[in-house]
Amino acid sequence: MWAGQSKWGKDLEPMGEINVTPLVDVMLVLLIIFMVTAPLLTQGVNVDLPEADAPSLQQNVEPLVVTIRANGKIYMQKHSIDIKQLAPRIKAIRQTKHNLPVFIRGDAKTPYGRVAQVMGMLESAGIKKVGLVTEPRR
Image 1 (cartoon, helix red, strand yellow):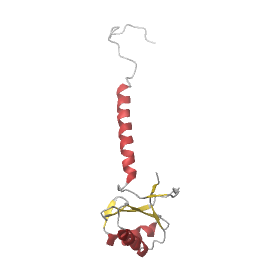
Image 2 (spheres, rainbow, N blue to C red):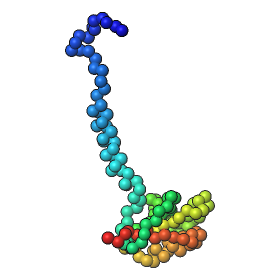
Image 3 (cartoon, one colour):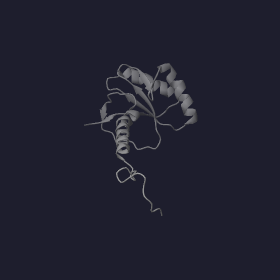
Image 4 (cartoon, rainbow, N blue to C red):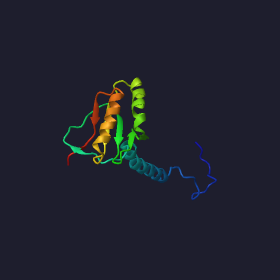
């Protein structure tokens, strides 16, 4: 071991500890950012779902979600789609994923005729079972 005199002097010796305060600050900011953005990633298209007394489903596969807004605009997952393109796209998806569940999220103010049109297009795409997504009754 070295037992000589230090050239730094008593007050100017290098500190042997790491200052973790900036690291904690950065980590807290990142945590807040992830907490705020995580719910936005899973939401999808925002619609006011109708209320119903139905049990929630537990499944391991992420379903294909077709959303119908109150103005009649249709979305597949989060992407806007024309109703004429709905059946061909779903047929293409179902060729690779045969048992992919399909859910319809219709706004409570959506005209029934528009929901029937979408269900007809799903039927023409070969979808025999469709789930309707609702909000639990409060």
